[in-house]
Length: 251
Image (cartoon, rainbow, N blue to C red; front, side, top):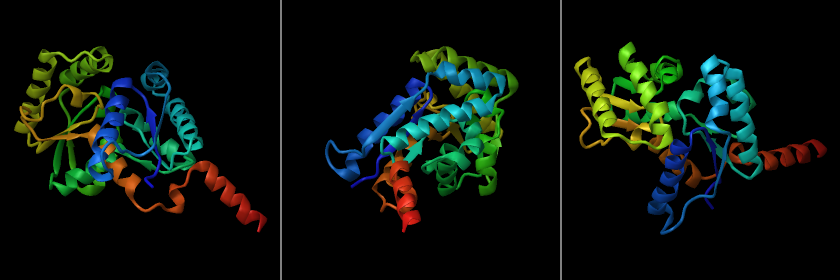
């Protein structure tokens, strides 16, 4: 049987895209109408924004960990989070997580390396573009990050929070993203990371000036692959791990 997937959600649109991708693309490997069991838990975006805006990543990590425990206790074997920005709190989450994670930026980095890219343009929230998530994940792979300029970072951030997370997909914003990608291409970017989980909703890869690395769908596909692999002890739900630990202690 496929392993149970846990989703730690942040914004509704990005979480929905990740969930739908897992459900729809699993069928190619698992059969018609089949996908892994999935449990999703979501504190509202507003709760996360309190910590993000103030730079209180411990508060963000607490939300992520609580969601992780909830999906683990529901039986999930591992967890994904379709939100790039809050991965800045991942170093605080990793030591405490009850089940393994697939890290979204590492998944993107592996795909970029597979395709031979060495310089990527990063698109996302201002917190993501100016934060350590992608530099930390890509530097060990020998991949350089290229950011839009300050004015463009501010406008991209506004589009994300005033339009995309609310499900508003405007043509003028799509054309603006294309313009930013043109500028990054001129500076040597070989591909663009769609590093906000809502950006794939507005970008058309067929008309984008650069090849795109869709972080949301890449994470979902990595989750599918993980779900159909042979299970390991580390993939067991938290409750099963606790029971086995207690059994070994009693023995």
